Image (cartoon, rainbow, N blue to C red; front, side, top):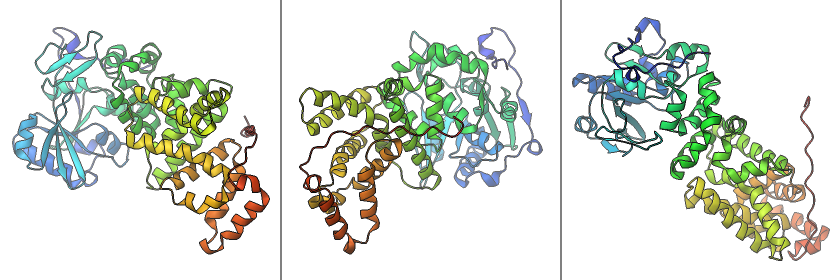
Length: 453
Protein backbone atom coordinates (compact mmCIF):
# COMPACT_ATOMS: atom_id res chain seq x y z
CA UNK A 1 0.00 0.00 0.00
CA UNK A 2 1.26 3.49 -0.86
CA UNK A 3 0.89 6.11 1.83
CA UNK A 4 -1.39 9.07 0.93
CA UNK A 5 0.44 12.20 -0.18
CA UNK A 6 0.83 14.54 2.76
CA UNK A 7 -0.67 18.01 2.67
CA UNK A 8 1.92 20.53 3.89
CA UNK A 9 -0.80 22.89 5.09
CA UNK A 10 -2.07 20.35 7.61
CA UNK A 11 1.13 20.42 9.66
CA UNK A 12 1.91 23.72 11.33
CA UNK A 13 5.44 24.88 10.74
CA UNK A 14 6.33 21.98 8.42
CA UNK A 15 8.44 22.97 5.40
CA UNK A 16 6.80 22.82 2.00
CA UNK A 17 7.86 19.71 0.08
CA UNK A 18 9.92 20.39 -2.99
CA UNK A 19 8.48 19.12 -6.26
CA UNK A 20 10.21 16.64 -8.52
CA UNK A 21 11.01 18.46 -11.78
CA UNK A 22 11.12 16.29 -14.90
CA UNK A 23 13.10 18.17 -17.54
CA UNK A 24 12.21 18.08 -21.22
CA UNK A 25 14.45 15.11 -21.92
CA UNK A 26 12.95 13.11 -19.03
CA UNK A 27 9.35 12.91 -20.25
CA UNK A 28 7.39 12.22 -23.42
CA UNK A 29 5.08 15.26 -23.55
CA UNK A 30 5.55 17.10 -26.84
CA UNK A 31 3.99 20.38 -27.99
CA UNK A 32 3.03 18.76 -31.30
CA UNK A 33 0.39 16.77 -29.40
CA UNK A 34 -1.01 19.88 -27.64
CA UNK A 35 -3.80 21.76 -29.41
CA UNK A 36 -2.90 25.04 -31.11
CA UNK A 37 -5.56 26.80 -29.05
CA UNK A 38 -4.06 25.61 -25.75
CA UNK A 39 -0.58 26.66 -26.89
CA UNK A 40 -1.85 30.15 -27.80
CA UNK A 41 -3.28 30.59 -24.30
CA UNK A 42 -0.15 29.23 -22.62
CA UNK A 43 2.21 31.43 -24.63
CA UNK A 44 0.16 34.62 -24.23
CA UNK A 45 -0.09 34.18 -20.47
CA UNK A 46 3.62 33.47 -20.26
CA UNK A 47 4.59 36.47 -22.43
CA UNK A 48 2.33 38.70 -20.30
CA UNK A 49 4.34 37.84 -17.20
CA UNK A 50 2.08 35.17 -15.74
CA UNK A 51 2.86 31.56 -14.90
CA UNK A 52 1.14 29.15 -17.26
CA UNK A 53 0.88 25.39 -16.89
CA UNK A 54 -0.99 22.67 -18.72
CA UNK A 55 -2.51 20.62 -15.92
CA UNK A 56 -4.71 17.65 -15.09
CA UNK A 57 -6.00 14.99 -17.41
CA UNK A 58 -4.26 16.32 -20.52
CA UNK A 59 -0.81 15.95 -18.96
CA UNK A 60 -1.75 12.51 -17.62
CA UNK A 61 -3.00 11.33 -21.00
CA UNK A 62 -0.01 12.73 -22.90
CA UNK A 63 2.34 10.87 -20.57
CA UNK A 64 0.33 7.68 -21.19
CA UNK A 65 0.51 8.16 -24.95
CA UNK A 66 -3.22 8.88 -25.21
CA UNK A 67 -4.98 11.69 -27.03
CA UNK A 68 -6.38 14.18 -24.48
CA UNK A 69 -10.07 14.98 -24.64
CA UNK A 70 -9.45 18.60 -23.67
CA UNK A 71 -6.74 20.89 -22.36
CA UNK A 72 -6.96 22.73 -19.02
CA UNK A 73 -4.58 25.47 -17.90
CA UNK A 74 -3.58 26.70 -14.44
CA UNK A 75 -2.10 30.16 -13.89
CA UNK A 76 -1.43 32.83 -11.29
CA UNK A 77 -3.46 35.31 -13.38
CA UNK A 78 -6.82 36.18 -11.84
CA UNK A 79 -9.94 35.37 -13.87
CA UNK A 80 -10.45 39.06 -14.65
CA UNK A 81 -6.84 39.34 -15.87
CA UNK A 82 -7.33 36.36 -18.15
CA UNK A 83 -10.41 38.04 -19.61
CA UNK A 84 -8.40 41.20 -20.30
CA UNK A 85 -5.88 39.18 -22.31
CA UNK A 86 -8.43 37.34 -24.44
CA UNK A 87 -11.35 39.00 -26.19
CA UNK A 88 -12.81 35.51 -26.79
CA UNK A 89 -13.02 34.82 -23.05
CA UNK A 90 -15.95 34.59 -20.67
CA UNK A 91 -15.99 33.95 -16.94
CA UNK A 92 -18.19 31.18 -15.58
CA UNK A 93 -18.92 29.42 -12.32
CA UNK A 94 -19.79 30.35 -8.80
CA UNK A 95 -18.45 27.41 -6.85
CA UNK A 96 -15.26 27.58 -8.92
CA UNK A 97 -14.61 30.81 -10.83
CA UNK A 98 -13.13 29.88 -14.20
CA UNK A 99 -12.19 31.54 -17.48
CA UNK A 100 -13.27 29.90 -20.74
CA UNK A 101 -11.30 30.96 -23.80
CA UNK A 102 -13.09 29.87 -26.96
CA UNK A 103 -11.49 29.12 -30.32
CA UNK A 104 -14.24 28.01 -32.69
CA UNK A 105 -15.66 24.80 -31.21
CA UNK A 106 -12.75 24.33 -28.80
CA UNK A 107 -12.84 25.78 -25.29
CA UNK A 108 -9.69 26.12 -23.20
CA UNK A 109 -10.48 26.24 -19.49
CA UNK A 110 -8.18 28.49 -17.45
CA UNK A 111 -8.20 28.28 -13.64
CA UNK A 112 -6.39 30.51 -11.20
CA UNK A 113 -4.21 28.71 -8.64
CA UNK A 114 -6.26 27.99 -5.54
CA UNK A 115 -5.12 27.94 -1.92
CA UNK A 116 -5.95 25.67 1.00
CA UNK A 117 -8.55 27.09 3.39
CA UNK A 118 -10.86 26.12 6.23
CA UNK A 119 -13.96 27.79 4.78
CA UNK A 120 -13.51 31.09 6.66
CA UNK A 121 -11.48 32.86 3.99
CA UNK A 122 -13.06 35.44 1.70
CA UNK A 123 -14.39 33.71 -1.42
CA UNK A 124 -14.84 30.38 0.36
CA UNK A 125 -17.77 28.50 1.87
CA UNK A 126 -17.96 25.09 3.50
CA UNK A 127 -20.63 23.04 5.29
CA UNK A 128 -20.24 21.86 8.88
CA UNK A 129 -19.57 18.37 7.47
CA UNK A 130 -16.59 19.67 5.50
CA UNK A 131 -18.13 19.80 2.01
CA UNK A 132 -16.86 22.69 -0.10
CA UNK A 133 -19.61 24.97 -1.40
CA UNK A 134 -17.47 27.77 -2.83
CA UNK A 135 -13.74 27.71 -3.46
CA UNK A 136 -12.39 30.98 -4.83
CA UNK A 137 -9.41 31.49 -2.54
CA UNK A 138 -6.39 32.10 -4.76
CA UNK A 139 -2.79 31.14 -4.13
CA UNK A 140 0.33 29.78 -5.83
CA UNK A 141 1.16 26.53 -7.57
CA UNK A 142 2.56 25.33 -4.22
CA UNK A 143 -0.95 25.77 -2.80
CA UNK A 144 -2.90 24.66 -5.85
CA UNK A 145 -1.54 21.13 -6.08
CA UNK A 146 -3.07 20.16 -2.73
CA UNK A 147 -6.52 21.24 -3.90
CA UNK A 148 -6.51 18.61 -6.67
CA UNK A 149 -7.97 15.17 -6.21
CA UNK A 150 -5.71 12.39 -7.54
CA UNK A 151 -1.96 12.34 -7.89
CA UNK A 152 -2.09 11.45 -11.59
CA UNK A 153 -4.26 14.55 -12.17
CA UNK A 154 -1.88 16.87 -10.30
CA UNK A 155 0.93 17.08 -12.85
CA UNK A 156 1.87 20.48 -14.30
CA UNK A 157 3.50 21.02 -17.71
CA UNK A 158 5.40 24.32 -17.59
CA UNK A 159 5.34 26.16 -20.91
CA UNK A 160 8.28 28.32 -19.78
CA UNK A 161 10.82 25.47 -19.91
CA UNK A 162 8.72 22.46 -21.06
CA UNK A 163 9.28 20.62 -17.77
CA UNK A 164 6.77 18.62 -15.71
CA UNK A 165 6.30 19.61 -12.08
CA UNK A 166 5.28 16.77 -9.75
CA UNK A 167 4.68 17.42 -6.03
CA UNK A 168 2.80 14.22 -5.16
CA UNK A 169 4.42 11.28 -6.95
CA UNK A 170 1.95 11.35 -9.81
CA UNK A 171 4.47 10.18 -12.40
CA UNK A 172 5.37 7.17 -10.25
CA UNK A 173 1.68 6.33 -9.81
CA UNK A 174 1.17 6.55 -13.57
CA UNK A 175 3.99 4.10 -14.13
CA UNK A 176 2.56 1.77 -11.46
CA UNK A 177 -1.01 1.95 -12.84
CA UNK A 178 -2.27 3.23 -9.50
CA UNK A 179 -5.00 5.79 -8.73
CA UNK A 180 -4.39 7.53 -5.41
CA UNK A 181 -6.11 10.42 -3.66
CA UNK A 182 -3.99 13.33 -2.47
CA UNK A 183 -4.23 13.64 1.29
CA UNK A 184 -6.54 11.86 3.72
CA UNK A 185 -9.32 10.05 1.78
CA UNK A 186 -11.96 10.60 4.45
CA UNK A 187 -11.37 14.33 4.42
CA UNK A 188 -11.14 14.57 0.63
CA UNK A 189 -14.36 12.60 0.09
CA UNK A 190 -16.16 14.71 2.68
CA UNK A 191 -14.98 17.87 0.91
CA UNK A 192 -16.55 16.57 -2.30
CA UNK A 193 -18.32 13.17 -2.28
CA UNK A 194 -18.39 13.15 -6.11
CA UNK A 195 -14.71 12.22 -5.88
CA UNK A 196 -15.87 8.66 -5.13
CA UNK A 197 -17.58 8.53 -8.53
CA UNK A 198 -14.53 10.11 -10.16
CA UNK A 199 -12.31 7.47 -8.55
CA UNK A 200 -14.34 4.70 -10.15
CA UNK A 201 -14.53 6.50 -13.50
CA UNK A 202 -10.81 7.22 -13.74
CA UNK A 203 -9.75 3.78 -12.52
CA UNK A 204 -11.99 2.16 -15.13
CA UNK A 205 -10.99 4.54 -17.92
CA UNK A 206 -7.26 4.17 -17.28
CA UNK A 207 -7.30 0.49 -16.32
CA UNK A 208 -5.70 1.42 -12.99
CA UNK A 209 -6.12 -0.14 -9.57
CA UNK A 210 -7.34 1.97 -6.66
CA UNK A 211 -4.88 2.61 -3.86
CA UNK A 212 -5.95 0.82 -0.67
CA UNK A 213 -6.69 3.98 1.32
CA UNK A 214 -8.57 5.52 -1.61
CA UNK A 215 -10.69 2.38 -1.92
CA UNK A 216 -11.28 1.58 1.75
CA UNK A 217 -12.98 4.92 2.51
CA UNK A 218 -15.72 4.46 -0.11
CA UNK A 219 -17.99 2.03 1.84
CA UNK A 220 -17.79 4.30 4.88
CA UNK A 221 -18.74 7.49 3.06
CA UNK A 222 -20.77 6.60 -0.03
CA UNK A 223 -24.02 7.74 1.64
CA UNK A 224 -22.69 11.33 1.37
CA UNK A 225 -23.55 11.23 -2.33
CA UNK A 226 -27.22 11.50 -1.35
CA UNK A 227 -26.57 15.16 -0.43
CA UNK A 228 -25.13 16.10 -3.83
CA UNK A 229 -27.23 18.33 -6.07
CA UNK A 230 -29.18 16.22 -8.62
CA UNK A 231 -28.04 18.47 -11.50
CA UNK A 232 -24.40 17.80 -10.69
CA UNK A 233 -25.01 14.05 -10.58
CA UNK A 234 -26.51 14.23 -14.08
CA UNK A 235 -23.27 15.73 -15.40
CA UNK A 236 -21.24 13.05 -13.65
CA UNK A 237 -23.54 10.30 -14.95
CA UNK A 238 -22.89 11.42 -18.53
CA UNK A 239 -19.14 11.33 -17.95
CA UNK A 240 -19.35 7.81 -16.55
CA UNK A 241 -21.76 6.24 -19.04
CA UNK A 242 -20.92 8.24 -22.16
CA UNK A 243 -17.15 7.95 -21.91
CA UNK A 244 -16.78 4.81 -24.00
CA UNK A 245 -16.47 2.42 -21.04
CA UNK A 246 -19.98 2.60 -19.67
CA UNK A 247 -20.45 -1.13 -19.16
CA UNK A 248 -17.25 -1.57 -17.15
CA UNK A 249 -18.08 1.57 -15.15
CA UNK A 250 -21.57 0.26 -14.36
CA UNK A 251 -20.12 -3.03 -13.13
CA UNK A 252 -17.58 -1.20 -10.97
CA UNK A 253 -20.25 1.08 -9.50
CA UNK A 254 -22.35 -1.95 -8.59
CA UNK A 255 -19.35 -3.73 -7.11
CA UNK A 256 -18.51 -0.80 -4.84
CA UNK A 257 -22.10 -0.05 -3.83
CA UNK A 258 -22.21 3.34 -5.58
CA UNK A 259 -24.82 2.56 -8.22
CA UNK A 260 -27.51 2.63 -5.52
CA UNK A 261 -26.66 6.29 -4.88
CA UNK A 262 -27.50 7.09 -8.52
CA UNK A 263 -30.35 4.72 -9.43
CA UNK A 264 -31.79 3.34 -6.17
CA UNK A 265 -34.93 1.90 -7.79
CA UNK A 266 -32.94 0.03 -10.42
CA UNK A 267 -30.35 -1.15 -7.93
CA UNK A 268 -33.04 -2.70 -5.72
CA UNK A 269 -34.56 -4.47 -8.73
CA UNK A 270 -31.16 -5.80 -9.78
CA UNK A 271 -30.91 -7.53 -6.40
CA UNK A 272 -34.35 -9.12 -6.80
CA UNK A 273 -35.32 -12.38 -8.59
CA UNK A 274 -36.15 -10.32 -11.71
CA UNK A 275 -32.73 -8.68 -11.60
CA UNK A 276 -31.23 -11.03 -14.19
CA UNK A 277 -33.35 -9.57 -16.97
CA UNK A 278 -32.88 -5.96 -15.89
CA UNK A 279 -29.14 -6.49 -15.67
CA UNK A 280 -29.02 -8.11 -19.11
CA UNK A 281 -30.90 -5.20 -20.71
CA UNK A 282 -28.71 -2.58 -19.02
CA UNK A 283 -25.55 -4.43 -20.04
CA UNK A 284 -26.77 -4.68 -23.65
CA UNK A 285 -27.66 -0.96 -23.74
CA UNK A 286 -24.30 0.09 -22.28
CA UNK A 287 -22.38 -2.19 -24.64
CA UNK A 288 -24.33 -0.70 -27.56
CA UNK A 289 -23.60 2.84 -26.34
CA UNK A 290 -19.89 2.06 -25.96
CA UNK A 291 -19.80 0.64 -29.50
CA UNK A 292 -21.52 3.72 -30.94
CA UNK A 293 -19.05 6.00 -29.18
CA UNK A 294 -16.11 4.04 -30.59
CA UNK A 295 -17.64 4.44 -34.06
CA UNK A 296 -18.33 8.18 -33.52
CA UNK A 297 -22.08 7.63 -33.86
CA UNK A 298 -24.60 9.87 -32.06
CA UNK A 299 -25.88 8.85 -28.64
CA UNK A 300 -28.51 10.22 -26.27
CA UNK A 301 -29.02 9.89 -22.51
CA UNK A 302 -32.71 9.19 -23.23
CA UNK A 303 -31.96 5.74 -24.66
CA UNK A 304 -29.75 4.73 -21.76
CA UNK A 305 -32.31 6.03 -19.26
CA UNK A 306 -34.95 3.90 -21.00
CA UNK A 307 -32.84 0.79 -20.41
CA UNK A 308 -31.90 1.66 -16.83
CA UNK A 309 -35.53 2.13 -15.75
CA UNK A 310 -37.53 -0.11 -18.11
CA UNK A 311 -37.95 -3.11 -15.85
CA UNK A 312 -38.70 -0.86 -12.86
CA UNK A 313 -41.49 0.71 -14.91
CA UNK A 314 -42.70 -2.73 -16.05
CA UNK A 315 -42.94 -3.96 -12.46
CA UNK A 316 -44.86 -0.84 -11.41
CA UNK A 317 -47.19 -1.10 -14.41
CA UNK A 318 -47.86 -4.80 -13.74
CA UNK A 319 -48.91 -3.94 -10.19
CA UNK A 320 -51.30 -1.26 -11.44
CA UNK A 321 -52.73 -3.60 -14.07
CA UNK A 322 -53.31 -6.28 -11.44
CA UNK A 323 -55.42 -3.73 -9.57
CA UNK A 324 -57.66 -3.18 -12.60
CA UNK A 325 -56.02 -0.31 -14.48
CA UNK A 326 -55.95 -0.68 -18.30
CA UNK A 327 -52.50 -1.67 -19.61
CA UNK A 328 -51.86 1.53 -21.58
CA UNK A 329 -52.85 3.74 -18.65
CA UNK A 330 -50.81 1.61 -16.26
CA UNK A 331 -47.65 2.02 -18.34
CA UNK A 332 -48.10 5.79 -18.58
CA UNK A 333 -48.83 6.15 -14.85
CA UNK A 334 -45.88 3.94 -13.91
CA UNK A 335 -43.57 5.86 -16.23
CA UNK A 336 -44.57 9.18 -14.66
CA UNK A 337 -44.05 7.87 -11.12
CA UNK A 338 -40.71 6.17 -11.75
CA UNK A 339 -39.25 9.08 -13.71
CA UNK A 340 -40.35 11.55 -11.02
CA UNK A 341 -38.57 9.52 -8.32
CA UNK A 342 -35.44 9.20 -10.45
CA UNK A 343 -35.30 12.89 -11.34
CA UNK A 344 -35.30 13.68 -7.63
CA UNK A 345 -31.97 11.83 -7.48
CA UNK A 346 -30.47 12.78 -10.88
CA UNK A 347 -31.94 15.89 -12.50
CA UNK A 348 -32.38 14.77 -16.09
CA UNK A 349 -33.70 17.48 -18.43
CA UNK A 350 -37.23 17.01 -19.69
CA UNK A 351 -36.04 16.90 -23.30
CA UNK A 352 -34.46 13.52 -22.45
CA UNK A 353 -37.12 12.09 -20.14
CA UNK A 354 -39.84 12.89 -22.70
CA UNK A 355 -37.96 10.89 -25.34
CA UNK A 356 -37.55 8.05 -22.86
CA UNK A 357 -41.31 7.96 -22.27
CA UNK A 358 -41.94 7.86 -26.02
CA UNK A 359 -39.57 4.91 -26.43
CA UNK A 360 -41.45 3.05 -23.71
CA UNK A 361 -44.93 3.88 -25.03
CA UNK A 362 -44.00 2.66 -28.53
CA UNK A 363 -43.07 -0.79 -27.26
CA UNK A 364 -46.72 -1.89 -27.10
CA UNK A 365 -47.34 -0.66 -30.66
CA UNK A 366 -44.30 -2.51 -31.97
CA UNK A 367 -45.29 -5.72 -30.19
CA UNK A 368 -48.94 -5.74 -31.28
CA UNK A 369 -48.10 -5.17 -34.97
CA UNK A 370 -51.44 -3.70 -36.01
CA UNK A 371 -50.91 -4.21 -39.74
CA UNK A 372 -53.23 -1.38 -40.74
CA UNK A 373 -50.89 1.04 -38.93
CA UNK A 374 -47.47 -0.44 -39.67
CA UNK A 375 -46.37 2.28 -42.08
CA UNK A 376 -47.66 5.02 -39.80
CA UNK A 377 -45.68 3.58 -36.89
CA UNK A 378 -42.44 3.91 -38.87
CA UNK A 379 -43.16 7.62 -39.36
CA UNK A 380 -43.04 8.30 -35.63
CA UNK A 381 -39.93 10.41 -34.84
CA UNK A 382 -38.90 7.94 -32.10
CA UNK A 383 -39.60 4.79 -34.10
CA UNK A 384 -35.95 3.97 -34.78
CA UNK A 385 -34.97 4.39 -31.14
CA UNK A 386 -37.97 2.30 -30.05
CA UNK A 387 -37.07 -0.41 -32.57
CA UNK A 388 -33.46 -0.49 -31.37
CA UNK A 389 -34.78 -0.76 -27.81
CA UNK A 390 -37.03 -3.65 -28.85
CA UNK A 391 -33.99 -5.47 -30.24
CA UNK A 392 -32.12 -4.95 -26.99
CA UNK A 393 -35.06 -6.33 -25.03
CA UNK A 394 -35.09 -9.41 -27.25
CA UNK A 395 -31.35 -9.84 -26.73
CA UNK A 396 -31.80 -9.55 -22.96
CA UNK A 397 -34.43 -12.32 -22.84
CA UNK A 398 -37.74 -10.46 -23.07
CA UNK A 399 -40.36 -12.47 -25.05
CA UNK A 400 -40.49 -10.10 -28.03
CA UNK A 401 -38.62 -12.17 -30.63
CA UNK A 402 -41.60 -12.40 -33.02
CA UNK A 403 -42.09 -8.64 -33.07
CA UNK A 404 -38.35 -8.02 -33.37
CA UNK A 405 -38.14 -10.43 -36.30
CA UNK A 406 -41.11 -8.84 -38.10
CA UNK A 407 -39.80 -5.29 -37.84
CA UNK A 408 -36.31 -6.36 -38.85
CA UNK A 409 -37.68 -8.08 -41.96
CA UNK A 410 -39.97 -5.13 -42.68
CA UNK A 411 -37.19 -2.55 -42.49
CA UNK A 412 -34.80 -4.65 -44.59
CA UNK A 413 -37.43 -5.08 -47.33
CA UNK A 414 -37.62 -2.41 -50.08
CA UNK A 415 -40.63 -0.11 -49.62
CA UNK A 416 -42.40 -1.35 -52.75
CA UNK A 417 -42.17 -4.98 -51.65
CA UNK A 418 -43.37 -4.59 -48.04
CA UNK A 419 -47.10 -5.15 -48.55
CA UNK A 420 -46.86 -8.95 -49.01
CA UNK A 421 -44.99 -9.12 -45.72
CA UNK A 422 -47.77 -7.17 -44.00
CA UNK A 423 -50.41 -9.35 -45.66
CA UNK A 424 -48.69 -12.54 -44.48
CA UNK A 425 -48.61 -11.15 -40.94
CA UNK A 426 -52.36 -10.43 -41.15
CA UNK A 427 -53.08 -13.95 -42.41
CA UNK A 428 -50.91 -15.57 -39.74
CA UNK A 429 -52.50 -13.66 -36.87
CA UNK A 430 -55.67 -11.81 -37.91
CA UNK A 431 -56.73 -11.00 -34.35
CA UNK A 432 -53.48 -9.35 -33.35
CA UNK A 433 -53.08 -7.78 -36.80
CA UNK A 434 -56.29 -5.88 -36.26
CA UNK A 435 -54.83 -4.52 -33.07
CA UNK A 436 -57.68 -5.89 -30.97
CA UNK A 437 -56.35 -9.15 -29.60
CA UNK A 438 -55.27 -9.74 -26.05
CA UNK A 439 -52.64 -12.38 -25.48
CA UNK A 440 -51.48 -13.98 -22.31
CA UNK A 441 -48.19 -12.47 -21.22
CA UNK A 442 -45.36 -14.82 -22.07
CA UNK A 443 -42.60 -15.65 -19.67
CA UNK A 444 -39.15 -14.28 -20.27
CA UNK A 445 -36.66 -16.85 -21.37
CA UNK A 446 -33.61 -17.55 -19.28
CA UNK A 447 -30.35 -16.70 -20.95
CA UNK A 448 -27.82 -19.45 -21.40
CA UNK A 449 -24.92 -19.05 -18.98
CA UNK A 450 -21.68 -17.88 -20.51
CA UNK A 451 -19.12 -20.53 -21.32
CA UNK A 452 -17.10 -21.43 -18.25
CA UNK A 453 -19.55 -19.74 -15.89
